[in-house]
Every structure is written in structure tokens, then in C-alpha cells.
Image (cartoon, rainbow, N blue to C red; front, top):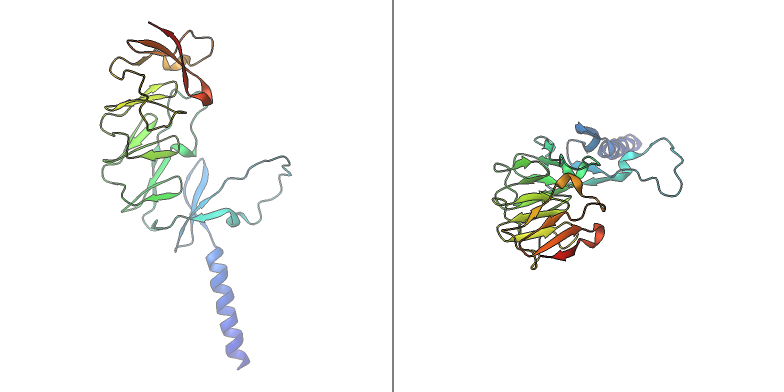
Length: 216
């Protein structure tokens, strides 16, 4: 009797231990995703906070989050769509993944994402129904006409948008057909203006989005 109890206990312990095993998937800027052959996990990064003792990372798996629905057997890295004009470089928000059936972005399975039409551009990615950029994705942006304008602005057939003003809500006061950014590489407070349309000059204004500098 004790033999069977000990065997059962050992099997349970081994089973639980196996659930904690993690094997890295797709090394890019450090490992971001792991698997134990059952689930795919996204690992949260370590933050410094007020106190950073730089202790050994003994139990890294405690920061793992299951990516529900992702297949560990067909999971793979698609690419990095970092914006070449971004002076601070890219981030994990510019990495996009897939398995045989799903687009996987920011640790989330996009259930109706279309892997066959997934394309990467300079600063964003699209499939047939949505746009992926800056850590978010939207079906309100038109993937066929979408383009980055620079200085936190982008445009599609429906209007012009700003990074800090709704992301996928068109800005009513900007004329999309005549809108242009002066020079995406010169998004700096000392520049007189960063963008204009036929009616106004505009300037990127950090977390406040943009402001009108002058009217034509």
C-alpha cells in the first residue's frame, strides 16, 4: 500500500515539476517566449524599481504568463518592424510572432488575425484586417492605405492620427489630403513646425499629442 502511495506521490511531484520547466522559443533581444511543450509562455521583464539589488534570477518562471491558444510546436518569430527613424531604437513592442493559425502580438493571440496576409513594414505591420504598431493593434485603421508620417502622426484613407490622441481616431481639424510632415528626423522643440496642411502648421507635443503653431 505504501509503495503505491509513494509511487503516486512521486508521479504527482514529477508532473508538477514538469509544468515548471521552460525551454526558450526564438531568441531575439533576449528570450521573450518559452514553452514546456504544453503551453507557450511570455516572460515579463524585470523592473529596477526604487531598489535593484541585482540578485540572481532563481525563479524566472514565476513571471511567465500563458499565451492561451498559441501552439508551442509551430510558434515562431516573424520579424521586427522597428521604425528606422526612431532615435531610441526598437523594443519588444515591434516584435511579432505567429503559429500555424494565429498572429501573436504582445503576448496575445489575435484569434482572427490572418497569418497568410501578415506583412512587415518600416515601423508597423498589417494583415488583411488590421494594423499593428507601438504595442497596439486596430481594425479601425485601414491596412491598405496606412502610412507613417513621422513625429507621432500617421494616416490612412479616413484621416490623420496622432500617437497620443486616440491612436485610431481621426483628428477632425487636420486635412488628410494636404497633410505632410516637414522632416520626420527633425521632431525637436527648436524646429518651427513639424507638420502642416493647407490650413495650419502643427507640432508634435509629447504626451499632449500635438498643437497648432500658426494658421496659414
